[in-house]
Length: 128
Image (cartoon, rainbow, N blue to C red; front, side, top):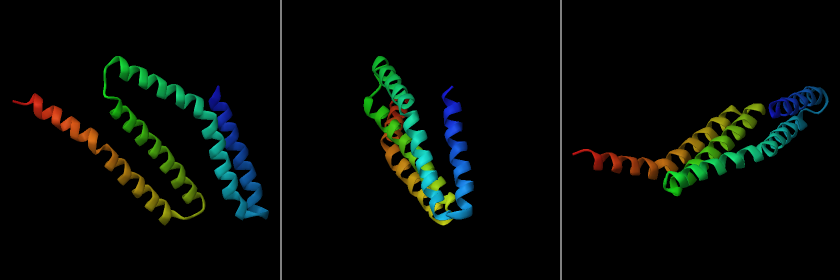
């Protein structure tokens, strides 16, 4: 029932933000960032369990650990980028949000090049 805790933190932050907008709108971004950080900390245990499972599976299947490492980094970059984009949009800075989003996508593509390259090499080896 951890989702109830996550939703609870979200709703509490939302209520605080609604109340703060009337008197101190400049503080609402801090509440938003704090709520996101609290939810992230709450999910660290789940995240580490997922990483352990993926590591164990890759060891059993003799998959190159570099590929798994890159995939985990790409996933982390995607989550962090989405978090930053959401904060930018919350503050009304959609132009900056789109630039952060573009930057995250470019970084993800550049990090995935070794995986794509290895996949293409495998395909070329299979083809006659």
